[in-house]
Image (cartoon, rainbow, N blue to C red; front, side):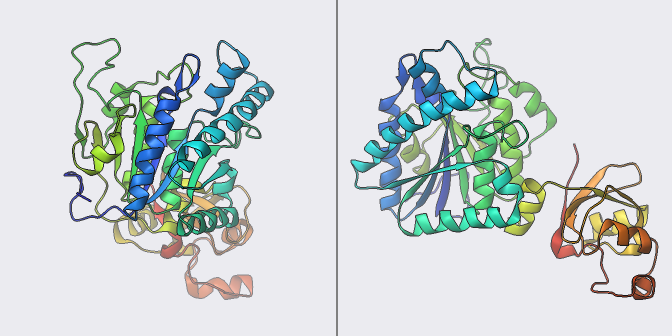
Length: 378
């Protein structure tokens, strides 16, 4: 298999492919031609020993059209009911499409809670690894039938990014109803130009992307840019392209696709740090002085009690918390070795004084560097 010209010295072994509602649906229901085409191409890639994870939209759109509604409902119970109707039909079509090529599929429905809980995060990863080892295609969607605002991903662009991070993918391919990121909204600006490569994502990329979703989806180009931010920061490239072409995936791996390629940072972020940075839900914050802030951000040091000046909220040992400077800017996220109550007792002390103050000293560090990831605020 040929390499895409944007990916240097890298052979893609595992890819996450996300298909949006705008690609999967048409006026009278699911676009079966697209489902069959994408399934055929994925089967071909699997036969070349590539591992493919499919993140699909379409359940809500399928349900809306199947029931005969004019648009997505606003009320959560109605949205959940519509998704339940649509999901069954969506998976049935995928099963038929992949079955033509003697491939089995597995349905996996997730909420963001499955990622923020470390144990469930690891369980999900182990399940996906097992399915891939059996050459079964995991087909993932948000669990809209039980999701509420507090635990939903918000859109499948974000979900696909989280799956790419979870599975340490080599690339995330986002198939949508436009060729990629343009200098302007191509729907209303005929002079809009496609941006073929984004080396570093800046604020202006989000500004030109806008936030206008399609009528059946929850995302838009802006949500794709935010997804690209996450994966590229972890060392995973992302490619946005139009999903309706007859061989869009095969063309990409042959280096022939039009679209927008987002370059990753040079080094991949370790899986544990990916979880800390993008999946964990911090339960509080530790405020540090300027010396500790500099040591953590520029020198790669652990957080010691001597550099701590305050604690926000109550939390226990092992909890993910934010590390903030004196101006309350977030510097990073880490797992604490001490509870909030104990940190308040030892803040400002040398590590050698911890045992005298607490009566015990399991660690010299409040947060060890191995359990800490730096976060750059925009």
